[in-house]
Amino acid sequence: MRICVAGAYGAFGIKHLDALAAIEEVTVTSVMGPTAEKIEALAKERGIGHWATSLEDCIARDDVDAVILATPTQLHAEQAIATMRAGKPVFIEIPMSDSLDDARRIAEVQKETGLTCMAGQVRRFNPSHQWIKNKIDAGELKIQQMDVQTYFFRRSNMNAKGEPRSWTDHLLWHHACHTVDLFQYQTGEVASGAYGLQGPKHPDLGIAMDMSIGMKTESGAICTLSLSFNNDGPLGTFFRYICDNGTYIARYDDLYDGYEKQIDLSDVAVSNNGIELIDREFIAAIQEGRKPNGDCHDVLAAMETLDRIERSMS
Image 1 (tube, rainbow, N blue to C red):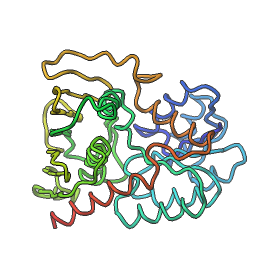
Image 2: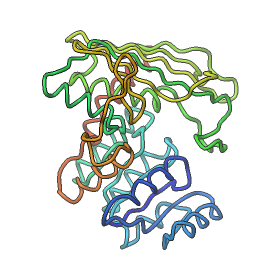
Image 3: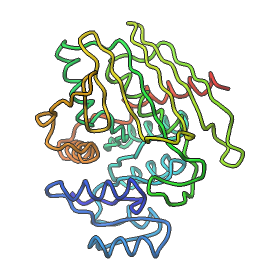
Image 4: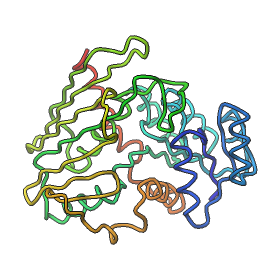
């Protein structure tokens, strides 16, 4: 499998390059980034034969079998559609798009082309959340409440590497997208009730810096999500699962019980790296000719809930 990573020198582009390097019989043959000097240097450092500043140059190549988009959110829909139109399967980093209309356009083109189109809902693949899902599927756990905190300190337009961004991040369509999809995936239900509250918008960035989201399913499970770009403290997303049979705290790829005792996840998957696991699923789905976990049509339910939450805040 020969892969192109677009947006390769961004924070998540690097994560995907590292993950792909751990997967057998996979080669990154092309990388794309908007600044020639940066993408050329990365290609040389990683021993990648082709680099370009436009996606069109990459998807036209015969030595590119599939594409991973780790590009700015606002470009996802057009780039995903262009990739599928070029006959290439595509993985779209979270979020699939920043509007429901664009997500539906992506799904329509996937249906038309029949190509693999996967959204980067990595929480489905973190071993911590996989362990919970396995227990739910086995009938050993039922979620009563998910309490989630997504906290960053980002009062200027910087990325996860501390470098200036060319685009503006969003608490709802990016960061809440993780939890909205995960809540519906873990409960097996679409939220019957969903609403949001947002604080003042940043005078320069034009986005809300604080947000509160509530969801509920028909069976009674609830989710409370707090998000902030104003948090001056530990950064990241922390999930508390309050279940009928125990409480569990997930911190990315690690899991603890309600008393902070770490749970052994060594038998959950072939890796403890969620990015590697989601990349493995993308590649395996292409090779096996099947729908991946995180197929763009499956993620539409989360995009529809995000749209409902956005409308509730306006």
